[in-house]
Length: 64
Image (tube, helix red, strand yellow):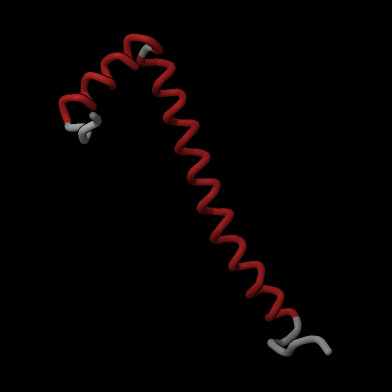
């Protein structure tokens, strides 16, 4: 019943989305999505940095 979506079908879907929402709104949504992904990656990178800083504060020795 359902088959895989090919490149032609994706182009048709993209065209319909552009007609419905317009180019301006699509670019705005894309920009916001990019900012969200960037913030998520920075959050993941920052989480690892925090644990390293806490080890440096104690001299690398666990608290007793």
